[in-house]
Length: 290
Ligand code: FAD
Image 1 (tube, rainbow, N blue to C red):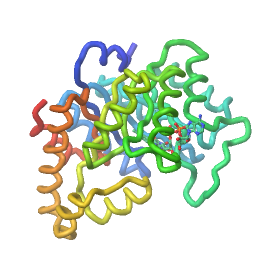
Image 2 (cartoon, rainbow, N blue to C red):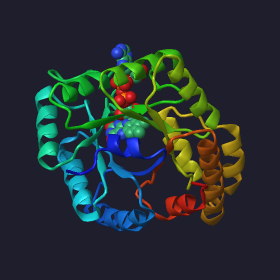
Image 3 (tube, rainbow, N blue to C red):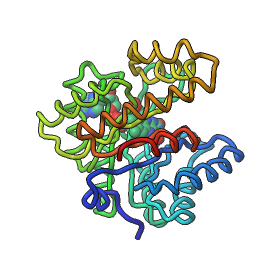
């Protein structure tokens, strides 16, 4: 059986992992294998592949996760969302994962399809992530389950305390670790960890890191996520807008400093949002004090 992330966490004080988004084209899929082929040499503890529930992509995450595990021998976490699925469909996907020896799941509610203002769960489906965890746990203990966490609070949450309580609901339902949304101010991460500790959450909170490659893309991306961009980030990257080489250098420097400060402050590893590119993450990874 492929290693469970829960076993890796028991063995190692810190883990390093790489996330890949689901490619949109056959070329993108092909390029992705080249990216992982480079990043595998950094010996990550696990990889992860995102999920999209739209009809065209059903089954694609499972296929790619299976191929990564077969080709690279690295545990690969399958993201899975409630959005767009009935409970019966979710059970069928989970059956398929089991058949393929995929035992690590990042359980998510998922983002509503673009343009939908008031999202309603699919009839016969699930509304919140904790229900997906309950569904997985009601079967057996084959799976290790991770969940998403939001150091700044989720965009739809009324406040950070409520958001933390909902996170605890996911842990109480059986999730074993947390991977955070990207953030650029480490005080958000450390404050989050403290808040969760106060309400009895003791699982690992692994910070999610996005090295900056493009100022304008960053603005759009953070707006869609509802993530804050601190003034310091604007000050560094705005004057470099349009200069890819200078942005790259500053992106490496910023991410290395951010990662070092997180690790020195006790973060139990790092999870990199690679955007399916090897180069920048590789540079950052090689420069941080692990
Ligand atoms: P939930 O925990 O269910 O929370 C959703 C909302 O409901 C929040 O506002 C929460 O505060 C509120 N809530 C939670 N529980 C309750 C409750 N009991 N009562 C009332 N309100 C409640 N999206 C994808 O589509 N595919 C991916 O592959 C993907 N990967 C991701 C990976 C990471 C590391 C992260 C951080 C996010 C990822 N997302 C992905 C985005 C994620 O699906 C969205 O941010 C989604 O809006 C929230 O998902 P969740 O699992 O945190 O949902």
